[in-house]
Length: 58
Image (cartoon, rainbow, N blue to C red; front, side):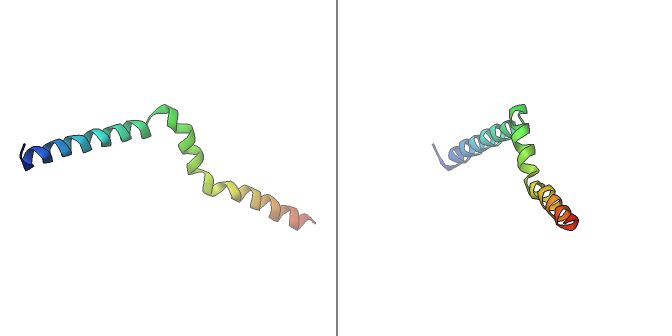
């Protein structure tokens, strides 16, 4: 086994890992957790808005 064989197997291994991660990320089981994570920056906005409105009414 020479260096070029090692490079070929390494490339093939990385391709398999990439495809496996892509399938995992786009699977339907992961959609809900990813959507929740995507909306985390906006989670406090609603609470902050309600607090500000409450303070204005007082």
